[in-house]
Image (tube, rainbow, N blue to C red):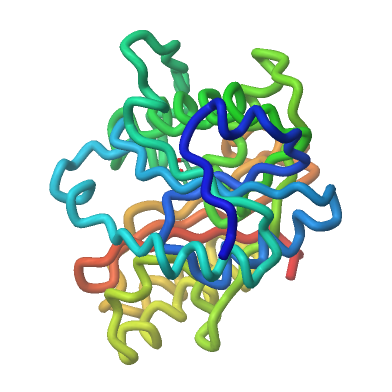
Length: 261
Ligand code: PAF
């Protein structure tokens, strides 16, 4: 079985090349991050911590899937060295420095989830402080999260290299997420509209595609500048379509570089 670490002391016995922060409920998308980690070093630790600070809704937090045994097996199969599964007291002792996600923290995903990104940044910073990895890997699926983490690392000059990993998709081109488990087969087919819209490489055409699928309830669809996360303009070099919405009661998010695969 894979080594399971619980405390800062456990972590301190080894030097970690790569950290992959997760909240558990691992799926092949997470495994792809672990496989990518092998390009960056041998000692790979996957953290599993369901972070209460990033849940604005208590019921969501209580219902968050906890599958630690399967997670350990999946982490091991993908090639991780260890799993770091700390208690809440270990991550949040009485005094802990909070990180504020700033203005962008209140837009797009942040508009729907008040305080979410400050909670994410606070736990990620804490994990970096505890694990001290040379590299940390995050999926591009959560593109706003990835952007804010890179921004935090730069601003606070944290000694860690942030690696972004491409989104893994299922047979319907739906970005892998633990939430997909709550979709029926026909709902997954409905959700394919997201990838169809992103594949148009155009905001106008993407809107038309979305409008043609009444079972998808759009939250936002924007064309952003990847370097600033502001609306793309004529001078923008790298553009990305970002989208969020609901199929039935399940909130889905995705994004794709314009012209990208
Ligand atoms: O993307 C996630 O699973 C979480 O937001 C993260 C980065 C593990 C922080 O809790």
